[in-house]
Image (cartoon, rainbow, N blue to C red; front, side, top):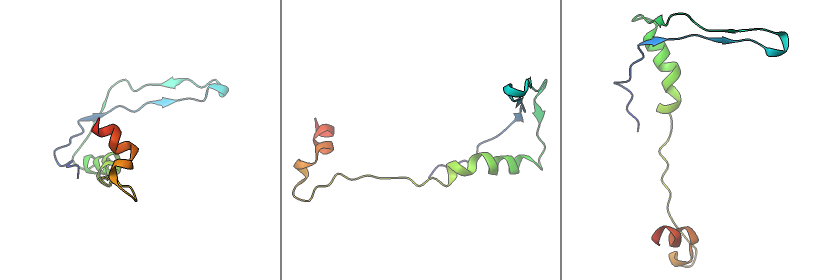
Length: 78
């Protein structure tokens, strides 16, 4: 499991990319947005939740007859 307890977001830059077909421009933030103690936990939850919920996947080599017939096992062994 990935431990994100010590992860920290210091500031946030907010940009907006316009629609090229409507000749909208790109808008870049001039200064980073400073985060306060109220919004930081919300942003951490939003940005890091996909990483926290990932299952660790473990794979095993197997074959119905014998492991030596598993091609991937043989490639890894070599």
